[in-house]
Image (cartoon, rainbow, N blue to C red; front, top):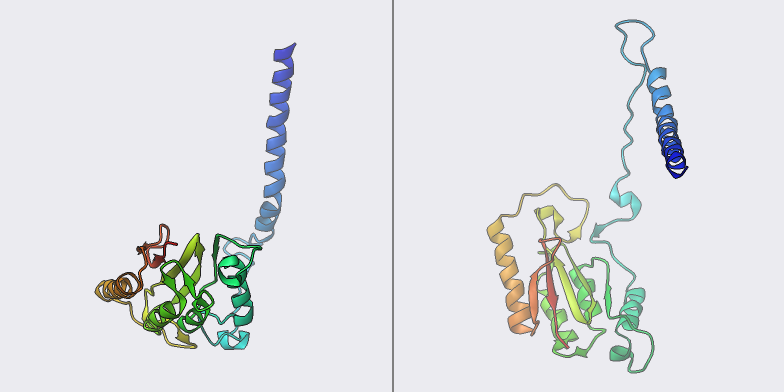
Amino acid sequence: MVEREAERWRLCMHYLSRAAVALCLSPFVLCVQAQQPTKPGEPPGYTLEATKLPDASRLGITQIPLEVDMNLAEQFVRIGFGPQVLGQRGFQSTKFLTPPLSTAQAAELVRVVPEYGSFRGAAVAEGIKQFAGRVSSVEFGREGSPVLYVQLPYWTHQREGPIPREKGARIPDEESNQLVEELRKVFVAGLGAEEFGPDTIDKRKIRIWWHH
């Protein structure tokens, strides 16, 4: 009895799955049939159309990375660091990250955290400014303690700055490696960051972390 019911269940699921596949494919099949040529030798009766996306300037995009509302960004960071910045008990997040920022906005934002262990907001801001126009973006946040992620460009037109711009040239590996060493010198040797290296997923993104 049990074996018979199991066999009925198996057959039922088999036919249901086949019906579901047929139902999913039916619009495609009908579409293909509808596009078949009416006479031998005629091309299929369909066309392809491409819609050009509007220029970035028409969308209000004037530079990369996109500017953020600094009032909201500062509130975000203050809430994230909580008592360390606000000086009172309340909500905080031990892990958060801003969207990609320009070096100018990132330098302004890190000042919201005057001091956190070996991290000094004003000094880190000056360090970030040294790489203006040379990196793609900077993200700031907290992984227990303050952290920066610096995005390295592949191409010259991927560096931060105004748009529109023409497609640039591929940045040589030697130049990228030199930029990494400069970042290490500024943030590790000069500003006391304790962890420095490529992100585990995006190797063109450099993670810089300060211990509390």
